[in-house]
Length: 355
Image 1 (cartoon, helix red, strand yellow):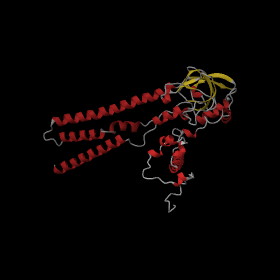
Image 2 (tube, rainbow, N blue to C red):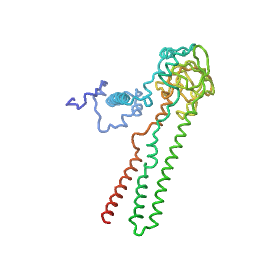
Image 3 (cartoon, rainbow, N blue to C red):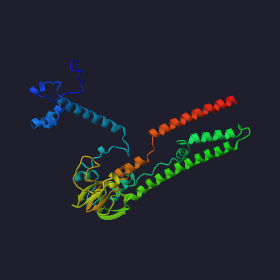
Image 4 (cartoon, rainbow, N blue to C red):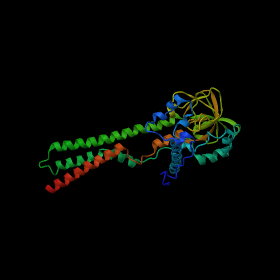
């Protein structure tokens, strides 16, 4: 570290302003407003970057650079089939010829049967993976998640206060215990109903995908079920069709437009393009995403991702994966339940000792 300036070695001021302006320090009457673009323009028209302090501009560059490095490090820790960052994908940045070369296919011939068989083994079927079944954990959460433990412990204590502690047994305690057990069962049933409703929504995802599509296999144009698609297939899309997989457009008519509202919520259709229009995989118009549909025109696309590797499949996988951490509300409820249970256990101990 430079002892005189107090500047960390990681920050280097690369821009040096020459002339009287650089030598003049800020006086007390100088303010942020006096350095604003509007104030400078009132005197003379200059480039806004010159009017801004050089130090802040350089510091912002260094912070952005270090943030980018940190993002890359975080990305390396989270590589997963469903959560891998889309910045790793480059199908939208390479040319169509390069995409065809990488997948060893052609627009006229398509894939051979041998290629299809190998890729089915490598990539699997073009369908979302079903969620993992955790029957015991699911039913345990139905009964004992939230306020379930308090209700059950309370019901047991009231039953004990009815018999054998009750001398004579009070019917009010029995009635209260029955009510607590009923509430315990009702809340478990309500949790099960909520889970069943959400599972119905997830199962309806499959209905959003097309059943059949038109492709080229062994130089012949055939219709086959969408789950049988593999990366490298050449797919023909026309108005009214849903995209069966993530596609890199090879050809697109001038009026070809896609509705992406199922993924992005945008109601306005976007024009399809053969050339890349954005560095972001999710924003470029040369990529057609699974589940979106063509509202006009026609296009030909190269399948670049299927199943859980598509944007649609990754979103579906993220919604189905189990939570590893409690939410803030769940933590507060857990703390409250533990406090109440601790108080009840203390009172039980006191009552037993006093009895």
